[in-house]
Structure formats: C-alpha cells, structure tokens
Image (cartoon, rainbow, N blue to C red; front, side, top):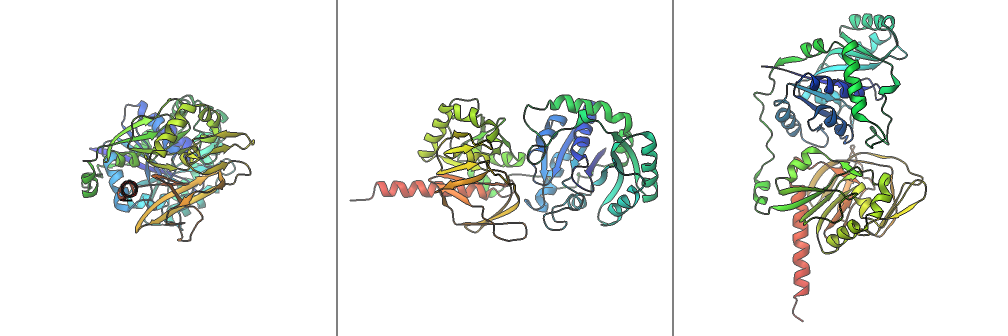
Length: 459
C-alpha cells in the first residue's frame, strides 16, 4: 500500500504556506482521502484551521519542545492511519530556534518527508532559479521535489518560473493566482481564529481554485512511497508513571471556546491518561462542573473581555474552586482570566476572576515571543511563549523555577503559584513529559497535607 506524505515549506514567512496547505487539505478530503495535517513548530493557531480543512486534528511536530523519538512516534501513529499526510512548515525552510534546530528542514530530514516549496513569485520571474537551487542543495539531508508558485499574474509569467524550475532541477507543480478574496488577515501571530472570517467559505473556494492551476495528481505521485511507517514504533502515551495514576481517575476540566483555544492536541491526549477530560466554556457556561484538575489554556481573552466579565456566575464558580484549594494550571490567556482584571488596548477595564493578585494590560503592548525551557525541582520541560499582554502590576509569588530561552539564557518569565493554582505566560508541551502533570499533582497533595497537619496540630 502506498501513501503520500510531504512537507510544504518556503524561503520565508508570508509566502502563502498556510493558504496553500488549507486548500490542499480540503481538495484531498473532497476526493474522499483520509488526510492528516501536521504543523512544524509550536503554532497553536494554524492547527485549528488545519482541523477545519481536513476534518482531523492538526498535530504539532516540534523538535525543540519534544524529543526526536516523540516526534517520530506522533508522526508514525497518525500518518499510518491516513492516505495522505500534509505537514506545513514554519517560517523559512531552514529557520530554527538556533540555526536549523527545530526547523522545517530538520523535521523533514528526521521524518524522511519530501519537501514541496511554495514561493511568492509576485515580483519574481527567472530569478527564482538560484533561489530554488540554493534551497534544494544547501542541506543534503532533505529532498526538495517540487515547487508551487504563489501570486502568479499570467500564464506567461508562469512560463518563466517553469524555466527556472527546470534549470534548478526541481519540478514545477503549478501556481496560485493573486486573489484578494482568498487572503486571511493576520491576528497577532498566525491567522485569525474569530468569527470575523468565514473560514469554511475561504477553504472551499481554495479547494475549487487550486486544481485549476496546480497538478494535484502529480504532487501525490512524486510524494508517494510504500508505507514508510510499518516498521516504526507506534506512539504509546502510556508509561509506568502514567499507569500508576490511572487509579486516581481525576475529573480534568479544560476550557475551550472562542476565548480559550490554544491547545496542543497531544497534551490533551496525555491528560486523558490521568483521568476523564471534560470541556467547559468560560464564555457560555454558568458554573464549573465537578473538577479535580482545572486547565485554563491560552487564547484571546482580551477580544472577549466584556463577555467573560459579564459571566459573573462562572467567574465566581472558578474563584470558589481555586480558593478552596482546587488544583489549577493556567497558561497565558488562562492566567489573564484568573487575574483581577484585563485592561484592553483602548483602556477599558474588565474585572476577571480575582484569583491571582495581578492585572494584565494590552496598552502599549509589545510582542513577547520565543521558546522556553523551565527548570523546576529537577524537572526540565520545554514550551513556547507568545503574547502581547503584560503584567501591569502583581503581588504573585513565584515558584522556585528558572526559565531560559532557546540559547539557554534566563528570561523574566516565571511560574506563579497561589495555594494549588499555578500560572505562567508559557505554553508548555508535556505530551512526552507526563511527570510535569504529576509534579502539579504532587505539589497539590503536599500542600493539602501541610494544611491538614497545621489545622490538626496539638495546641
């Protein structure tokens, strides 16, 4: 049985990788193929769109946040269950956290994926030849097998580009014409995720247009091979540590709605080994369900600050849970939600849950972005930090944890704690480090035991 798998990359960002990826995912899905989307790097926005286009969960492949063995396992596990696996690259082909580390090229080499380039040809013709040649030959560990051009004006324009491909030794697979109707504006970093854009309409329109000028059959042909995953060790989330926790059968409650949507699929899969995962909406639900562990992921709470603030019964329910010692982990947008208030870019102040002694603001905002490693009680875990908000003022207590960037330099980001509530601006990837969740549980148990001992100490 043959399968097709390939990575879509580019010389740089803003070349049209995501647009092409979304369209191809839907083209293949509409053909009745099982198509599995992947995303290189830590992006938790593009994977949402991938899931919409393909009808399967988008998965991250990141060799900074996770071990190579874990990345290979995730890829083998999901790609083996699909007819076609489409991976979208991150930034330019060779851009990594430190030189090539974690780059699309590194992941293509690790997983033996052929590379299909998408090149912005809006202001380029035959000059594409040395660009393609350099990308093809710079690193012998990858195979660049085809090129799809974006923003091509005419068939005459494309003829110059085909000549460039022929002389660079890479096959031209077609092009996308310039079309403003297919443009998805940016929101902070990545793409819009709100209802402002009709994604389904844009994706279907892409699926209609792409086969007219892109040779999809040839793309599948040159990226097909015998099942490359039959000899792989299939990913198993279970290990001794997690199996021991099955007896806990925790009720794990995860926030997910328009305001909280920055989730790594494999993190949730890992949580399921600790108990039953249930979902709730801080925007629309009135009270928190019965919970043993609350997870508030990141998102765009600032865009829904009024609606979140107006849902007073949910704010009170979350606050009671946390103040009664409920185990909670909040990251980025989740931390903002647990603070006293969110100050929007226009200066409006919206009260939040008031669990944490902090305010966050979007005024005079600047982007904080980068990989992070946390060193905490002998545990090391990697993640990614991305936000425009900032702590205006806070009296939160920090855990004895040190965070560093991709080059090992200390950063100001901290892990905060109040009772059994933990919060940070970093989105951690714990799918291959379940001891991260176990550490929270242990900390909570120790804290509860200390409080009990104090309360029952002989007078």
